[in-house]
Length: 180
Image (cartoon, rainbow, N blue to C red; front, side):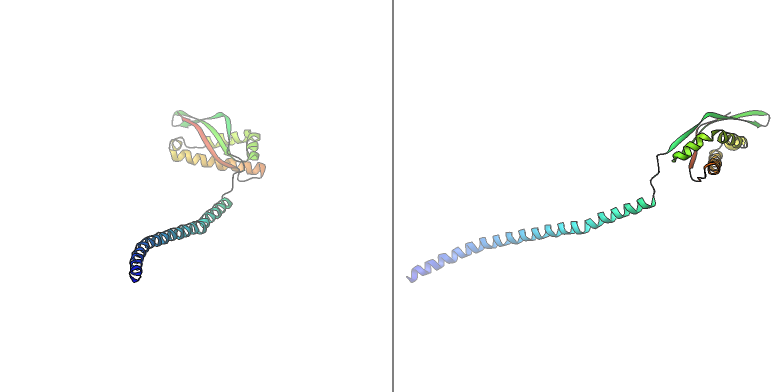
């Protein structure tokens, strides 16, 4: 009987070592699985906690930008002043000419209506301003830009005087500018 117990103990010892080796493998697999689950949970928690703040901060930043930058009332409108402007210049002994097609940019319908209503006065002032220019200065890009700025200021002054609105004329644009 003692021999049987020794055999069972020896066989049992071998079985325990075999199952203990398999148990260690199972234990390692379980630990790795738990670590992966914890790592995945930690990554998900980080994503939802901290990335959500970035999106909220981005949305707040976008709202702050929207508050500072106002949406235009309506899209830009271009009022074409037809027919084109033709002005003559006396340069030395020669007669010179300037032909310009001019458009006025605004975003307000009331300004567009005022530009149409007061077009004779606007055309008269534009012709006067064009006639006062130095022909040689208009040949340079700087001269044309200065003329655009002067015309924009003059039109804004006319619109302010006639309508009471001071910020309606955004730009005066030359769509054609021929000098000879």
